[in-house]
Length: 360
Image (cartoon, rainbow, N blue to C red; front, side, top):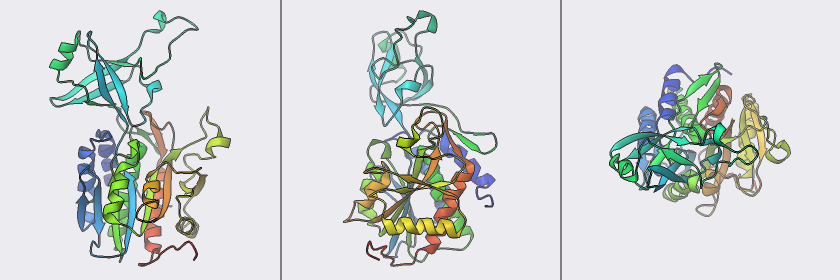
């Protein structure tokens, strides 16, 4: 498959991933995404909580959604001790195990404040009886000596905290950084839209390119926007686990590896005929894919779309990811390109008015 991601695309991806857009505070990232998408759509829709939608053919009655979520996991300031240390609660699925010794940025009304998650030195810990990191004992040190000094910095309970780790390309074809979950998805649907535009392959139906907020706390942005759009079809993209690294049970998690292609999910929320369309499009266009079975739910915005509005034909395309919810999330460039191409070719295959009826 020829290279799909160009240098302009890669510059956008780097800028997009390096911005902080934690759950509930996605505005900056959403603006970057809309600026990039603007030349390729007819108009935008935004909602009260920040979900952004680029629309092609807004007058059309038949509506197809391609969707990703824009928010990243983070922390909230929860408690400031008398000696100026800051204790946290999660905003999404933040991993307490990776926190010790990580640098952080606290986003305040006065601007950004730098800090670190501290941890006792190895010399001071009791061999064999070491405390493990827990939400109750991890703490942030901003170099202050009292809670009053912390407050003078502008830090308050409720301020959001992110990691500053930047995007990089590792060994020429591995995308590395924080927030690949799931701004990679926002990148995939934006690139698919760009390619359709540049190839003069504008669909005849309404195409809604959706970048939802608040997925990390319960699919909330998708839940809201699907009621606004009322789509006929929704194809969601997210990330899934590369299960080839140590300490992962493939019998439980499935056999998925970066570099082997995009992933098509099998789950009750994934409508059978729409999923079969993805599989046939992949086969016809020689797009590398992998298969993943999900029990009960997909855990992605697919579930929110599928069970909305009396039922929406929905499917899920995923990009394999190593080390999810850490600051060193890793994806393979070729898998990202497979996902983009699968979107492009699937959109081209959809005929206006298709129902993807269960009994067809």
